[in-house]
Image (cartoon, rainbow, N blue to C red; front, side, top):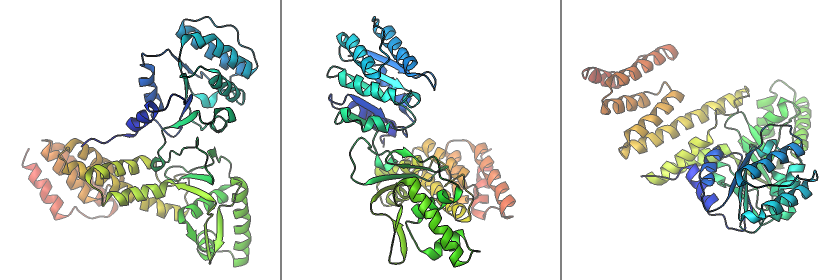
Length: 415
């Protein structure tokens, strides 16, 4: 049973944009941006111009000169020199290419284009293009100035949008402050699309993630986790100073205190990848095969790496181990679905990934051995057994269970 992958969903969203959408911005967290460029560049019903910002720290004059050259070479057109003022340059370029019809313009690596001049230019350029023309922008950072630009309201779309995959629609007006937290990996935080890069030390960042991961916690739990050796008075002072720093960094309060608990402020719209990851795995357990595949693939895509991999506090390590086990179970769950559907190569691939995460799990090793046996690869099956045997001896000083050993003996008989 075939399910739509992230790229297919993104392409469908891009293809279905209405004509009045003059500016499409590819979501920086979508890692298939360049794959999306391919189908767009193969369109035959309109002229297409592609330009990738060649290097960071270009002046605006250099950047717009590269864009002008792209139009000249790809449209086989002669374009007059562009003014140095961004708005005037945009008007001149739009006028020069207007006779070529509804042009599709793709600008890659926009995040290293010179700002704020590039924003002023693109907004004016898009506004000056004839109806039906479109500009697609790709890059590694969210161009919030473009998304919120007054002249582009109602004409801009973010693609793809999928809240379940932590790709939020910042092109739409949202009443609350949007807090986007990615803890699966090194740790990344955005507030209203703005990346938080400076935390004023390790402690504010660590306490921030603790609050978000717990959702609701008491002062005693916080003190025991962070300052178990300090007196209550000393811990209280450090806590309030740190909590105030977090508010200053975010520009808003992260928590409220109510009935003895610190909770995430109701003024925030929190999008937390760990919550979405856990919910996808839980929902997959009661879903049919088709839905389970989508849910488990989503959970696997959300797992960008071990929980807060740049931190080493005890609570982080414990949570990291717990979530790594959930990740292995998501991989194994998807493998079991494919095995049940008699798609052995897919099943084998996901079982192997699960075993790499949890090398001591004998159930995974046995599933891999059985699949290798069914595929006529007994040597690979026995290599799996030998890896398991070595891992159990090294870490637990035990031997594989009789059930696993018997399976290995059966497979040896095939050689």
